[in-house]
Length: 122
Image (cartoon, rainbow, N blue to C red; front, side):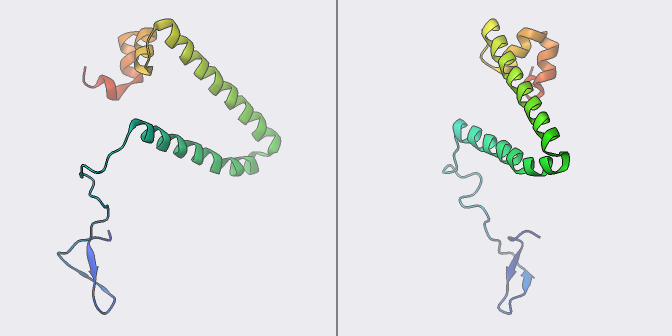
């Protein structure tokens, strides 16, 4: 049950009540709840990095130190090559977004395949 669905009584137990407790303060649709692109990017980045950092000890334990280090190195090289390729394609195409690079490199079909949320409006 959600915390707002039941109100505690004097005896300490919960009973169904019409009264609800606001769990988010201010409410989700309040004009004072604002965010910026930079705060969203920071939140997403820390979530991804945090999950990766927290899972590394378990992965190293399960795979062994040598195998885990080799895989970590290979994944790092792949990530570096991916970023290099995206930046290179962006510079060659003159596009500043991932969607723009995908459309330039892969055409309209590739654009729709790589960015479904963006292409739903087309």
